[in-house]
Amino acid sequence: MGFQDVCIEGDVLTIIHKLRAADEDRSCISSLIKEIKERGCGFRRLSFKHIPREANKAAHAMAKH
Image 1: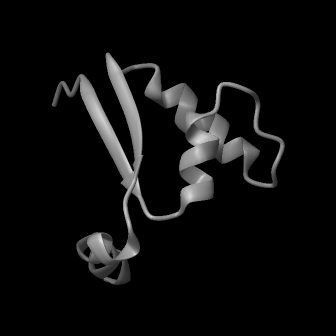
Image 2: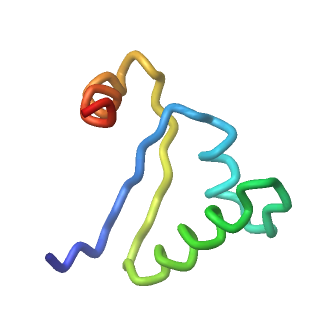
């Protein structure tokens, strides 16, 4: 589709912090964080934004099905 500018939103603040961090993650999900960051290099711009769970109801509804 040719997306160049991507914003990923999530309601788990610790995950958003890990994705934004410049240093290497050493948590139990470090491999996932690393993979997301590596795949993000293909975009001109990639940002991670924290949003409250209440504002993320559509994503939760989609994830359940």
